Image 1 (tube, rainbow, N blue to C red):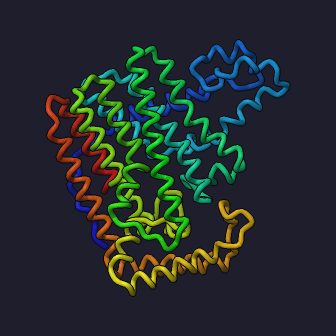
Image 2 (image 1 turned 180 degrees about the vertical axis):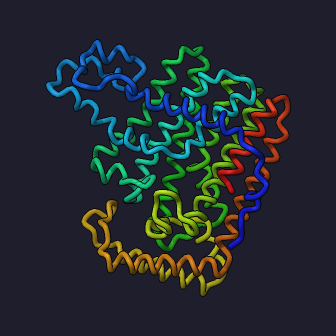
Length: 391
């Protein structure tokens, strides 16, 4: 299997800077859930309002009515549990690094980066429900742990929290309004992309073109990456044309990252998830689409394998939440997954997808490298960081 062209040419990352930014973002994310404040039995209106920038502060007026005030936290639990599991956090890091690129105020960038990451985690909870996924980041998914209703509610709460964050930062009204508009536009685009993805894996016979797949990724995966890049530039007062350039580059990077994610799913496996689970979920990933476009025999072979995988997972009372397979059926499914992966490798579609992602990323990288009047050391760290995500 071919190695990534970037694997041996990575510039040095300022790891201390990256680690510090990630710690600051992590603190900002968790502080929205009253992190560091005693959460014992004191859920009085006064104690809740004392932490006015938390999610819970929005419901302080009813705290005194509840005989079990800790039940208010039920809304937070699915989102907070996922956040505590970690994650790559590359979107907030992208935002903060781009803000620093133009000499912007890091404190504001960290808070807004936390908002973007909260929304991303909300989308993961909803995505896992739609896919019927069992694992996320190596642990049981929110809908498996807390129930479908609580997970939907918790995911939606994470979508709403950014508005609260934007309003609490003391920004000029024009800037705050721009944040709201850009944020909700990105969320709308994300859900149109997710709608395409769901439509495609719900129709086994539908094989989108590569161009259609890339458009779906631009919406689903590129929207929040482009938002992060644009907000980082906007907060630092970058020229509008630079903000536009970075937003487009962020979207393209999101697409490249999604393709690499597809490739990893079929090779090393993504951390915390089962190798080949995209095939189980019926997703039309780029390696699959490239393979079925090669010739009729390959398309028929993969179609047959995917139909057999789907049959193994059929017959559940709730198809959206497939039940774990028996050991025997699980082994059969694993064998079918490996058979499908081997068929794709046989026509080089996995490597072809990787090459497409790397070529797209290289074009994006060259555009960013040409930016003028930016902090060269931060630019180097930014590019080294994105290189590593694509490698």
